[in-house]
Image (tube, rainbow, N blue to C red; front, side):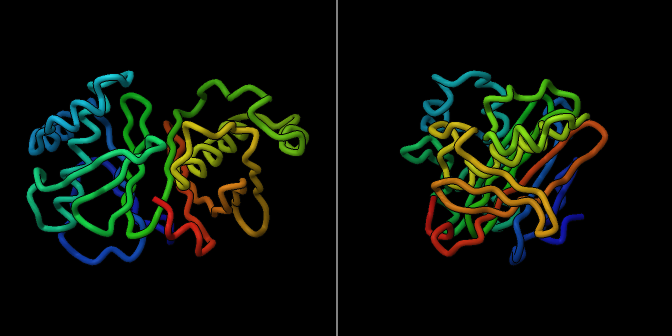
Length: 222
């Protein structure tokens, strides 16, 4: 388990309690237990409007329900009291309960939901997925990645996506404007939006990344 976060897998087992580090829930949408959990929440008109023009709306709707169930469990409230909207840049924002931040990622049937008391960004990819094109990387990154095998390039892509989601600008940011570094200091991403530290959680089937800001300015961004 990553000492910078709490990672939950499979069925949801949490109780209302102070969360001092990000909590990340990794589950499968095709699991009957997950479907039963999702049935505890329903979507309102604003939720349906949010998904109407988006691809894979059914998957997104189920992720929204699960997010409401998770936040409700952490805050001892009913899922219907949880309110989630989108920022001007399209990033999800939690209105109720107050003081929470959210990032969601998914590659069917896998779903990753991250919540914390400060901004975070998450991303997920199946192992062995086609790597992004080389033009998604900076010149320095292309040199570093030349000759690399396996999912090395995919891991760098996860870093970029998680970083962009941290700052709420994933839809507006070109991947090659985000610099990634992996070394003795750990995994770091940097762009005009700011700097982040990245932690990973991989399994035999999937690869996950979480970005957290390490500059005070990040703490005020939605």
